[in-house]
Image (cartoon, rainbow, N blue to C red; front, side, top):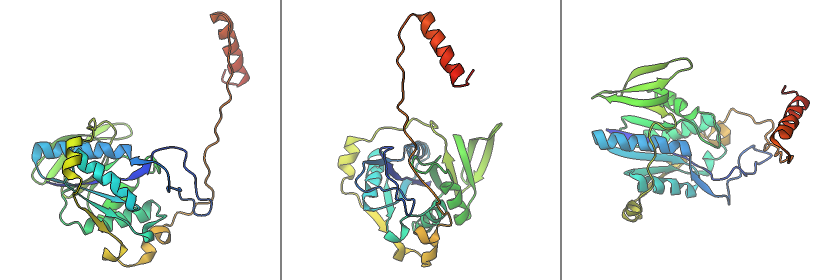
Length: 262
């Protein structure tokens, strides 16, 4: 089975500035990490490989330093990786991002199963995976809770629906977005770090894609228009109360009534 996992480098802190003109996060000079939700997708791929064999590829989109998350994936057990990096990709919304990654996937050859995390911590849209599948014209299932079975030409999954849990049998090739805690992600291996320190990371840019229409990538290909974006206000107000349990309880009741919670 040829498995592809989509991973992303996200800010390692919530204190990230926003460009007031473009509405894009200013990522330069801040600590970064692999999107936590992608770790569950990668672990799912590793579990499938251990049981059914095959290869695990990873793909990411971002500036050159995003190669660090591919190296981390190698340390966990991924076999090879591709980074999509080009200034023409910068500032992409979910639609342009989905299209760009789908074009990169088309360059990677045969894939049976594409795995994505539920969402990213810097965007929280949970849209990129399904939109990629639509561009690739393959079936897809979101909110996957568990893998029930793997057949020669399909995979059986349990998915979380608004009011029910349902079982679906999906033909290959297909795309799944997995829920948090489908498996417990393993830690990177120091031995694998040493073994893979010189492993190649394939780099693809705009010129490598079949579709050379610049209006489908980056800011040019992003129909989402940001009218206003700002960091949330930080409220650090606090009150310290002392007294007996009865006295503090009365103060709490009075405060809740003052705030109209009671």
